[in-house]
Structures are given as C-alpha cells and as structure tokens.
Image 1 (cartoon, rainbow over the protein chains, first blue to last red):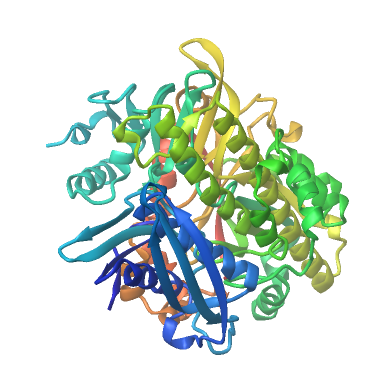
Image 2 (image 1 turned 45 degrees about the vertical axis):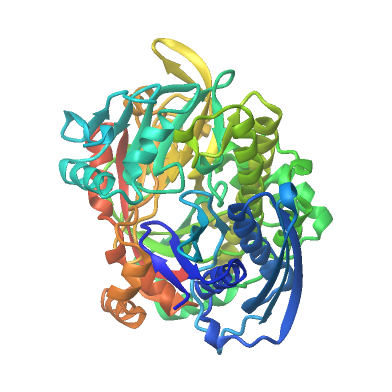
Length: 141
Length: 484
C-alpha cells in the first residue's frame, strides 16, 4: 500500500512513502479520497485540471489536497486517479500541474465513509528521505 | 520525563499543569485519576497528545488565566478538542485550531409534544426522517440558496433562514447569540467557500454528525428541566451538525493566512502547530469576521434542518409546527468575545472553545430570559448507542472555567482502530436489540462511530458535575439515530 492510515484519536492521519515527489502527491490524494470511498470502487470517468504554486513541499501537499477537496464539492466528483507534473521555480517555489479523474457518488455502488473536511497543518511532514519522499498529514473528518 | 508529566492533583477531578518552559500561564485539566493517567501516558508516548497541545495553548501570547481541558479532552490539531483558551484582546492571539474546520458545529434540540408511547412505529418515523433530512457524503440540501443569497445567509444566520420561511420566529430567542453572530463580513470569505456551500445548506454531514429522536430518561434537576420544558418520558429531537463546506474552506483558507501571519508576528516554535495571529491585527480581525460568517452558516444550517424535522413530525403526527419548540441551539467550535471576571476584574476576552460549549449559568444577560434563573442548556452528544445529556452552567464554572461545558463523550479509539474492532452490521444489530432504530448511509461510518470508540459519557458528565463546572439536568436515551 503506497499510503497507510496512522493512529490519530479524533481524525485520520495518513502516512505516505513514494519514490518521487510526484508519486507521493498522487498517493497522498488516493489516501485522502479512500477515506470517503475506496478507490477501487471508483472509475476515472471525468477529470479536472489543477494548477497551483507553493513556496514549500509541505504547502504544496496541503494546497494540492485542499484543492482536490474543493473540487469534490464544486464538480460533485470523487477522485480515484491522479497525475502530477512539477516544475521547480527556484526561490518562487514549486509549480504543480495535476489532473484528477473520478466519478460522481453513487450510493448504490459505493461504500461511503466519512466526509473529509480539511487538511490540518498539525504534524504535517513532507520531505525527501532515504532516496524517496515521505509525507504525513492529518485529515479532519 | 517531560514537563507535561508534572500534573498536580488539585482534587479527584481537577489537575493542574504548573507553568514551565515556554508556558505563560498554567493549564488545568478536569478529569478523574484514570483519565489523568491516560493523558500522561499519551504525552509520554511521543505521539499525538492532548496534554502537550494544552501546554502549547498555555504558551501562546496573551493567554489569560489557565488553559483548560474538559473531561472529554482528546488530541486535536494544535489545540486539543475539549480545550478552552481565553486571550486578551490587545496582547492575545486568535488560533485557527481553537475553532477548527467545522466552525460553530453544534447541537440544536427540539422538544415535541410527544411522549414515548405516542411515538408509534419507530421504523416508520426513522424511514421518514432518513428520507427528509439530507445526510452523508455528497448529500445536497432539499432547499437551495443561490450564491448571491449565501452572503445574506452569512450575515443573518438563523435569522435569515427564518425570514426565508425555514422555521419560526420564536426559534431565534433560543439559539445562542440569537442565531446571528455580530461582525460577520462575507467579504472575508472566499468565493470558493461560497461556491462549495450553496448546495449544502440544510445537510447533516457525516462522521460524528447525527439526528436523533431521544426520550428523556431521567431528570436530575427538576427546576431546570421544568424551565427547559423537559419531563421524563418526553420525546425530543437533537441535531448535531455544523457549517459544512463553507466552514471547512474558511478553516483551510485561514490556516495558510494565519500561519504566515504567525511567522511575521514572531510566534515561537512551540506554537508551530497553532496557526495564529494577534487578535488586534488585520489578519486576526479578518479571520474573526470569517469565523462569524461560518458560525452564522452553521446556525442557518441547523435552522433549516430543524425546519425539515418539524415539517416531517407535524405531517406525521398532525400537530401544528409550532408544537415543535426549540429548546436550545449551542455551538462547540468557536472563538467569541465575552466578558468574564478574572482576578476580581471584569475583562472582555476572546474565548476559544474547541469541542467545548459555552455554559453561562444563572443571571447572565446572554441567557434567554425564560432560562435566566438557571442558565442556558448545555447539549452534550453521547454516542449513538448510549445516552446524551442536557447540563447547565454554574456560578463556579463561570468563575473557574470561563463558563465552559463539555460537548460530548470524546473519542477514545481512532477511526482506524474502531473500524478494525467493530463491524457496522454488528453495531446496528446491537442497537436494534436495545430498541434503537438506526438509519445510516455508511456502514463503515457506523463502525467508526461505534459507542465503544468513545469514552464513557457518564464518566465525562460525572467529572464535570463533581468539579462543579456543569450540572446535570436530564439524561436522554436515543430511540432513532440518523447518520450520514
């Protein structure tokens, strides 16, 4: 499993380990949306494009996940597949172009869980470690 | 051993963490010995710790009096859930984690003219409410506001919802702050937040949100119960919901703003997880304007939900809609300006209550006039298989706890552990065996919200009462539970 749910009494903490930063961002998104509906139950029928910039890897992770949560409500989609390309802009930080694919909720087919409300900054971690990338974040549910 | 382990016993239900290190004041925990041991173990483990978070709140600039943890305390993000922090308006800070993503999440209680015997088929009523009240992931409101109307809703809260025909004018007197928080400025809220919200007004949400039909099982304080209109065997409806997507987006937007502001204002490393800015700063003021909008959104949301319930009950039982009366509506994720007496002086403070309610006791002007002799009700959600409580505030609680009340049982197991330990079907069967009708959109959600995943609400309420900060009025047993 590219992500795992960690112990957190009130909310849901997610840990991710990936070979690249792009993969880490995609796996974090999978972990986030699987709180709501298991990814294997969703089909990548529709897509949204996401463009954002951030000053640090940690904020890039939070902004990416928060943007996906906003798109969930705005487009009425639950996402299951993600692709990300990154560009480093020196002191300006990182620029992300991403695509998320998913489908509308179907309560007859989808085993729904709790709705994710937001991505906390508490305990937030996103860093390069031992040849890969690790992340840890808490989702308020 | 870390500083946080030096919890000093004040009484069997009150513990003190004296100032040390970066702490600018002490912290106080209302809990019994078993809870205190568990909190210390949690702190020693090096993982998420409510006690460490409480210590960090007590380290923030401008903190007034003790940072408080109530008996339902558990780790939040930065600020503990079940935590209370009061700050000076000039030198203090406003903390995003002290409000949370679900701004003014709270409980509305409706009294019905029904006794338990008149409920009739619980199955049929459960089906009706499940059909009428939108709940769960992806649900959309049965009533729809346009994006333009959202600004009016953010300014007017429950008042606006009533003006639009959702509910009765007499409801407003029984909502905290009259259902409309001052200082709400919709321009402090992003267009994205409004776009996310307009389909979600009048939706229950998911997770620990619920709608319950409850029976008053026991009355402990006859005078207060009589004043609130609660008697043994009577049927009430409790609605636990919040500010939905709008509150979530405000929380997300301002976490970023306040974290950056905190750095600019020189917050120290201990406060890294406590995104905050001075109350008396552009960022602090703007955030509080947005919080007031989120609070009004939650009031309006519960007002519309109450309207849906009222319509359903009036239609089913044939009584007038006015027969369903609002007992009270109270939030438990807020930062509010309030007057309190501190060291013999009256001071206006910014009081954060994260997973904690206001608990104004007898005599406060903020309490609805008919309740003023006893204080307003504190609505405590238990678990879906056990009990909920109505409490009230006390003079001691006003003097020692910034007039704060417990809000629920408080989780003891993570959702991950709960989902492993319990099966949704088993939880539903067990509730059915107890005569509780459960309707839910999520089996996984039922397992995560299993009564065994929470602390014992009896213990939480008992500690609050023994500490003298809250007093029991009535215990409620669920008859019907609707979950998202």
